[in-house]
Amino acid sequence: MVPARIWLSFRNNVVSVETKELEYVDDLALAAQNIFSLKPNVTTVKPNLGVEKEIVRFWKDLPAAQLLGEGKEQYLDLKESYVLGNRELGHRIVVRPVYNELRECFDRKSAMSKWVVTGTPGVGKSFFSAYYLWVAACEKKTVVWQPFETDHDARSTYLMTSDGVRRAAYGSPELVNALENSETVYIVDGQPPLLRPTWTLLVTSPNYKIYKDLRKQACSQLLYMPPWSYEELRHCKAVLYADEEKLPTTLMNQLFDWCGGVPRYVLQFASTEYESNSGDVEAAVQTVVDILTDAIDRGSLNDIIEAHQSRSREGDYSHRVLHLCRHPSGSLNRFHLAWASSLVENEMLERFSQEILHQMKHFLRPTDVDSRSNLRGVIFEVHAHIMLRDGGSFQVRRLCEGDATSGQNVQVAFPPAKIRYFRSYDEVDLRENTLWRPFSNTLPSIDSLRGPANFFQMTVSQTHPIKHHDISNALKQVADQSESHPRLYFVVPSDVYWNYKWQPYHTKDGKLFKAQLGDVGKVEQWALMIPTGTEKPATDKDEENHAGTKRKAIEEIQ
Image (cartoon, rainbow, N blue to C red):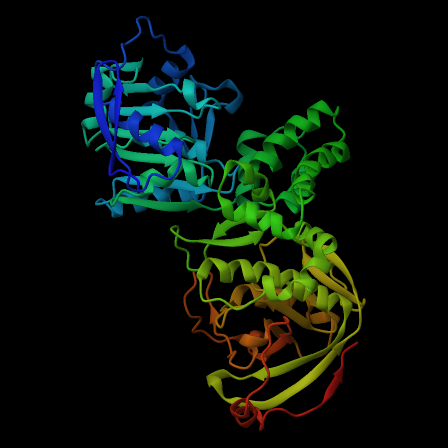
């Protein structure tokens, strides 16, 4: 039987720790640390705890930092210091639009005082902590800052006030008093924070052990920082890596095609490897891509998925392959799982196609759990592209506005095709027998296309609104290549197929598009069924419901 409390003694101090919700020895140690550090006599303040001069200069420089640029392209310029006191980080902080969204969320939900901001490793969460230090400095807040340390046992704690910066030892009266003040801003990077009444911001990789205790607090919330768009990376390069001699745009583009919106690889590692490889772009690309493919080579697809779901340090490698992207709803307290890039997805297709086919029932079984449904969608996209690449006959059903039944339930046949990737529609030739796929995920209404005028969007959801702007742009680019009626196929698993409905068109900001559709109105919407191996035998009721629509026909599409 587990006791309700465990009593601990340290330096003539005795405290008790509740065993409720303790799972590991680490949990007990952290709980003890949280309690003992409240007592000033637990740790003696070491004399002459010096502060690095660069950190002092950084804190002093923050209130005077200039916010330059406009709209979505802003950055902070630190004239006299380096970001977080680290020379390697330079003297500029690119202010992403999501930084302002996060700040607005903090202000809007004032009842919440414990915040965790996580996301795909390498998207710049530490830079966000620097940005929020600037916010606190401008508001003349007292700040307790614990920067990222590889050795958690030797972590540094800085007390930052209008008088300057001091190192604060655990248990020191000044630290205890600061952390007991709800007006203090407590910022922690990549390590479990102390549980105190003060307003707390933890920025961390998606490692559950780091943030689980903070999340147990009633006033806490977890938010996700999405990867960068190509436009954001281009702006970041212009601000931080403007010299083409140090980072060519062609190198950034090639690594974005592989690694997606993670500046650690696309900008930082790219610049370092370009220099170490004496300006050889291809060698630099290969070195960084090897880091990515190493994650794919760690084991089976199931191993990668389990590592990603574990939210552990050992599973960090999986985040190079699967990214925590912005949820379609736009909410920051939810995420949408996606492959790092189309090239990574294709690599997964090549490596694990047989595993997916042999274990379809495991990977693609229907589920009502949102996170599992998202994972199912990621795997289904790979499976669907395998099927479309290999060709064959597919059951399709015409979708009509207003949920009317078209009566068109037929089969279409696509011949086998090679897969090619494009950066812009100018590169697409629909006269070729090719399944065309965009390099990046910045074409949200199109996953692939092929001649004569067929667009494909993979989904496992019953709803998948289409951005009018995206499909309109695609039509303009390929209109002169085909006289066929354009079709938009929603490629769905069999459990979604029969009830799938016509999808509305939305504006860029996700609202219903109410203007004239123009050429988009000529696009036929169809559902295309991909079997997943989880199908159940049709019932009499199914036969009755669909008897009027099940008409055998074959359309050969070359």
